Length: 65
Image (cartoon, rainbow, N blue to C red; front, top):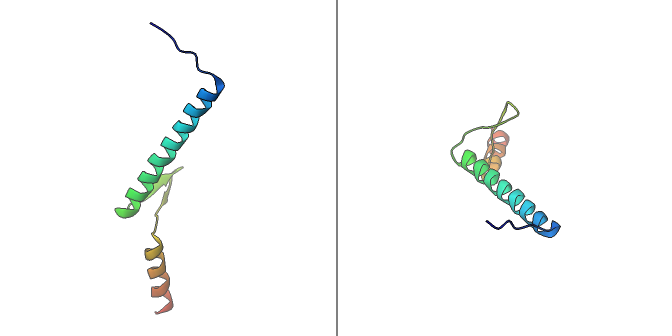
């Protein structure tokens, strides 16, 4: 069995790839929650995400009451 030693540049590249993958996973989670009108739980708090269109509709509804 051959063990490959990674240099610091390779380690940094692998780390960055992991960060990018993690960000993409959370982006997908946020988008899915918004599309299904479900809350995200962050540190025990519930957060709801609105699209720009939904936010605009809410503002228009408040103004036009």
